[in-house]
Length: 184
Length: 427
Image 1 (cartoon, rainbow over the protein chains, first blue to last red):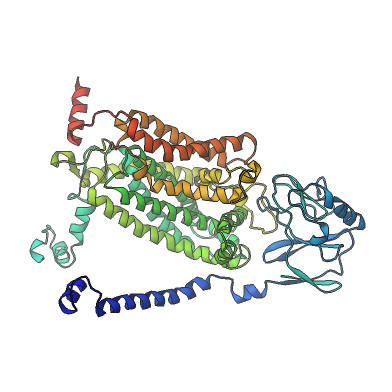
Image 2 (cartoon, rainbow over the protein chains, first blue to last red):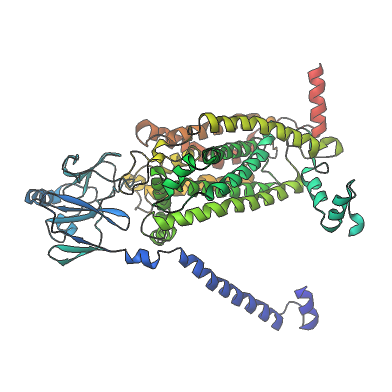
């Protein structure tokens, strides 16, 4: 229909006309409008402000004794915080030279050697490793042990044996003072 | 326009028909005025069975939604309240739970029937592709629905499956956060999954109408795979196939309600009666039975399969390759009309394809069995072989087979095949 109309009114066949320009520009503006209107729907599904407000967590480290671990929830995920003993730090540093799947020096995994802060989710299939309680199995390297498929993590949370491909990840955190940290 | 209005006996129907020709529409669609091949066997029942199950799911689902609370603190308890305190709540939930299983059984048989009789071939390609889209929508619906009771398997299943999207290059992590509405599966996730679970069945309903529209354009395929050539080949849908479908439905309902009343948790996972706990993972995360073959494919790719060979730089990891393979296993089905090069539709006249079809069916069962077991040792090896065969069948065997297979002679027409068969039986 449109073609017939433009053929009869706007000029020779096969040539662009003002009508074509109007048609194309209307479609373009309409498409842009649709995209703009779609954005609120898309963005509504992104994390909301209250969720973002809880995206960081402050932790008081004061009550944690040497050799003790606590698990706190940050962004819905468990975070392991451990005050390591001098012996554990020593082993972790000595093992820097060992062959590892995901080589990383202990020094780059901590801000202060006694405080190890990491996300407690096994990098294999997302299970929660054991080793937080004194009675838990800690694996062959004295750190954490994932019961699902047998991954062993050392005292720096590095993968040493088993199917997991990566070390336990370190969340972004800062020391607010000597005994308080903010994660996130 | 109005001169063409069909006349019925009942004057009220005539009054409506004159203004809105809905009765002739029904009669032309599923009534005495819709011609169907006269030789459809019982494998052709499963389309209507799937349709009935969809209606049952929507009906029970709407009543369950009246009593369900989509909040992480209350969802689990609200489901238990449905089970214990709400009148007939247990019935609605068990019908809904087992209805999901029955829906997938009906649809899997429906898909396999289409593959056996070559129903996807020209001119029914779009009909087939719409069917695959319905299947994908069903899988999405089932997945989000399984999260709603907020048990351990709900939570960890949701975590594993949503994490699959993190393999998308560059945007993976933001897409996963967008799906979650946060930084892990949490209350916003549960809320939106509830919303989608309510919406998607109606999308499926609309897709079913497109599916039927495409079906009615060229009518049903049939066991001979020969097109309808004349009046001798067809019988009216009503009463012949309405009666046959109704009988099949009766048998199907015995099976369906047998599980609902006598083994309602047979297909379920006991772990899901434990409240979701983000800090404790179940010993093993297993999907519902209807996803097991895909789960096996997902886990079939060897860990670090590229860098273990040390030949290529690491482009994709095992996890990414597994996700790609899993989606490809379904997308490949949509291309069946072009992958299968044979001109003959029905496996009845394709001696080699007939056998390979059953090998393929067996292969999917093997994948399902492997999907239910941890990906270790010989399970992993068998899973890899079965995955390789799945793609070998679809991508290599089918295109080649059409060229080399010697097919048996086709009957002249549907009616000829029926009368010849009966005269042979007579002798």
